[in-house]
Length: 448
Image (cartoon, rainbow, N blue to C red; front, side, top):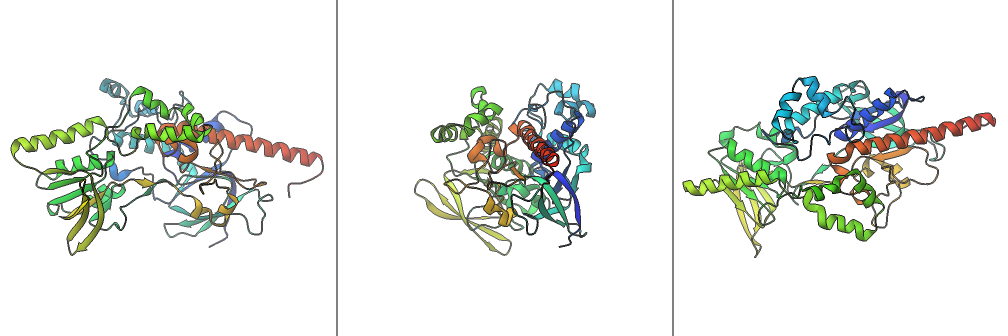
């Protein structure tokens, strides 16, 4: 690893999806407000260009949150980075209003994200994979005024070292597959769906299975049914059919910024109640219109005397065998847990994601990050990891904080507010550092 060191930044973001994009905008607006001390920033993203769930940009698939829960509006309703500002810049604001719909298509929202990132592109380094975050060589935590990030250039250029006074980790969720199942050219996770689907001649797909009970599973099953009129589509559902997402007004309050405080400062009993009563707002649930669309397709098949869409309820994938071009899926199904095998041409596992886990990235630095009795990272209200006493540099998480901050930790609903809180925290800590430096200088000391 080359020791070519870039300048030290106040903030370095690791990963550049919507969360750190929202943070970049919050920093941009902080600078635009004419604050005396600018906060310098750099964002490192291993992908070659911006992308957010590209492989789930299915035709007509809509967002599950209001367009007002964009990158900025809940933090700054007058921001020029809002979805409304994007529509105005694109010349589509009147047409969007005429739709009388709070939920844009996923494709249009992705275009909005691309438009926003282009405006802060000078602070993003694509094709840059962060390999590790560590203290400077030989430095003690209380003496180090920066962290050292080792960065590999995915495009074949020279590796480099970047220095940061604060790091904000937002590497995203980790795709989860059924135990004993690995992705290949005929076994896909939903996160790679469109890319893998487009590599195959659709005529080769005569029997396809989609495992999962959530929104992605239902959308993919509908897509395959519509796109492959010659194919049999199996929906492998661990529950007894799809469950509807609760998006009613009172339930949606769980995503309000104020709910983060209620969760963070609540008792263990209160936190447990959050999850017990409100998981059906987001986890393993499907929008009502998608459920009804699938049921209608199934019913119409019955009327025509065909069964091209088959729902395998109370069924789980327990294993997969590949024999040549044949994919043999082992299923445990029904109340008696009988085991059967299903031969398919492709299996799509819309089986969710695991939470972001920063430990591997932090390496030896992780020992300075304190954990709770369950072994989970302790996190301050401002999303900063609780570290050993004297640690001067901040490590912030955008994701992986469901146990401390609740349901919105990995969702879009609260990213505008969360990014603003992180910027406020970094700015406040900088002011304290600057005051300390002034005091030391006047006393004839130094910071070491």
